[in-house]
Image 1 (cartoon, rainbow, N blue to C red):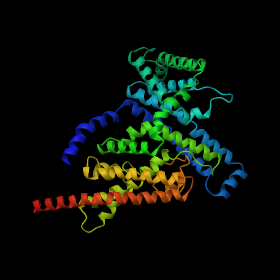
Image 2: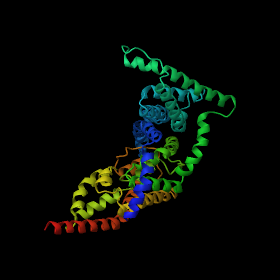
Image 3: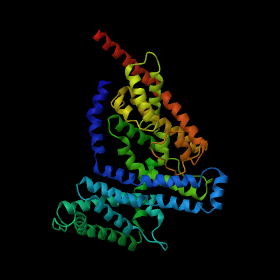
Image 4: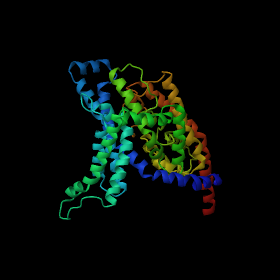
Length: 430
C-alpha cells in the first residue's frame, strides 16, 4: 500500500495539481457556474408549470398563467451561453490581474457579433445551451487578447484624477475594438464562404469528440474514473473533469427540457445530463460517498466502535446528506487512503450503470431538464429532476443501498485498523 501511495504522490499528484490550477479550466468552470442560478430559477418555473397533477396544470392554463411561467423558463435557460461568454472571459482576465468586467463585456458583445440574426432577432437556442461551445472558445480567446494588450500597456491611459470606472472604460477601448473587429471578420468570412456560422461549426468540431465521452455510458464511466482519481489525490475532480464535459451535459439537459416543455409525455432523447450526473451518479458528492457516511453512522452505534468513527459520524452524515463530502474526504480521510480507493471508484460507476440501464429500459423516467441545487438531498432531487416521477426517488434509494453495500466491507477493514491503532496507543499510555 505504501508503494501505491508513493506512486500516486509522485506521478499522479503533480499532473492533477497542474490541471487543477489550469487557468483555462478554472475559467470554463467559473463561467458556466455563473449561469447556474438562472438555470435553477428557470427550473422552479418549470416545476410549477409542469407539476404532475393534471388538475393543477389545467387550472394554470384556465387562468392564463402557464404562458408567463414558460416565458420565465425560456428567459432563464435561454441565456446560458450568453452569460457563460461573459463569465469565462471575466474569470480568465482576472486570473491575469486585469479588468475582468471589461473583458467579459467585450466577450459578450463578440458573442452577439458572431451570432446570426434571424427575422425575429437573435435565435434563443444560440444564446442558450447551443451557444456554450462558442462561449468557451470566444471567451478564452477574447480574454487572452485583452490581457495581452493591457499587460503590454497598449491602452488609453487617463490621469489618476479620473474616476476608476471611467479610466477602465477607456483602457478597454483599443483591445475591445480589436477583439470585436476580429470576431466580426470571422463572422463575415464564414457567412460569405457559405460555411454557416461559428455556432454550428463548433457544434460539429467540438461536439463530436466530446459527445463520445459525454453522451454514452462508456465515456461517462471513463469520466468517473478520472474524477475519482483526481479526488483521491486531493484535487477537486469535478472542477477538472466536469468542467470539460459540462457543456455536453447541459446541452443534453436543455434538449430534454425543450421536448418536455412541448409535450410532458414525449420520449426524451438524452439519459446522460447534468442532473443525471449530479443527482444520480454523485449522490453525497465525489465518489458517491453518501454510502460511506451512512456506513460510518451505522458502525458508530456499535458499542465497540472506534473513537474516530464515533467522532466522524455526526460530522460527515449531515453534510453528506446534502452532497457536501469535504468532512469525509479530508477528515476521515478518504484522500490518499488506499483502503477506500476501490469503493470510491466502484460506487459512482455502479450508480451510473444502474441508472443508465434503468432509464434506457423505461423502468425509470429520464431527467426532464429541471435543475435543482447540488445540495438538494437525494430522493427529493430524484423526484424533482425526473419531472415529479416517484421512479426517480426509488432509483436513488436503490443506488444508496448499493453504495452502502459497496462501502460496507471496505470500511469494516478501516474500522478494524482504527481499533487496533487505538488499542496499541492505549497500551503505550498504560
